[in-house]
Length: 425
Image: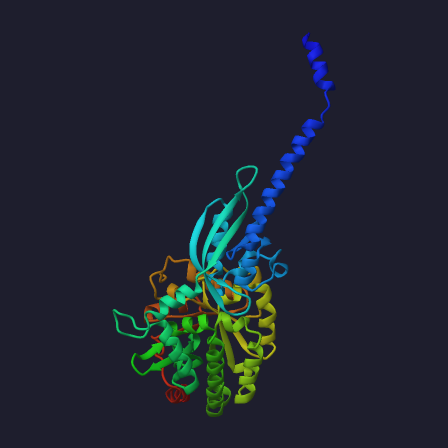
């Protein structure tokens, strides 16, 4: 048989055998996929698949149970929705690493539907695309909350210091908020143009300190995180706001038109709570103070955590007639486009740029840049952490509007601040 005859026979041979092989291969693949899909849906582990843009494409039953969102609620949303408010920057960094092809295994806190969070052991694995780049990623997570709680319960007392641990402090803090052992101190703020002649006060800041029976006075930085993790911060913050407004009204009665602004810190958890506007309005009305004398300080991390959700909340608060300041500016990742649209009045330069390891000198461009940015946007520039006269002089040269720090005023009780303000007035 010639080569031409063989080729002709091959072309004329029926092709149904090749088609049967193709269908069989496809069916085998479909059966394997169904088995895999059944395993993914049946496992207790949370399995979340995302696309190259970071949006959720698949969400199994384990993810619904762990995070509280149904598949209908989760699919199509950004995976960043699972990041806690204080870890959004880290979550964005993790997402970039995984989508760039890196495998990451970690123990982290992730956000549940509502205000609480869950500890998870999380494995992030990228999908390889056709060009060996990441076409997406899969996150497999397992609940570690009970293990973390058990480990905490086994150590109610720190063996090295003999002092109460975080779990014990949380229980005590909850009791102390109800009994009033958390005290409110006042820290003075001063406007620069008043400093050279006589230190006239521009404002005061309300600071929470916990008067612990064994540990003494505990600063807010050591117990606020505990309160945020437990959700107690909403109750504690409402209490502090009411106390501050009552103190503000007392200052208004004493000083009249010369009354300074009262600054009160609001945490990220408080800001996203749906009752925040009602809480602020109620505190103002109950105390009978002028809202124009009240300033809420929100951290840069808080306002940038979810700009689209935060902006309407800030607008509602501004309609009450209060002032809003962005605190700790320069420590997070701000979008200037969003910052321009936020209804804020002040930028507070983080103390690390003033008196910390990154303290500015004559060649440092950061502090002058932040002051220039604030003024360009029509905002007041406030410097935190002023501890020396040299720092104060340098800030005055740069045109900073307001200074705050131990050099100007140590925290004092409410009766003392009334006397100091009465003298300066």
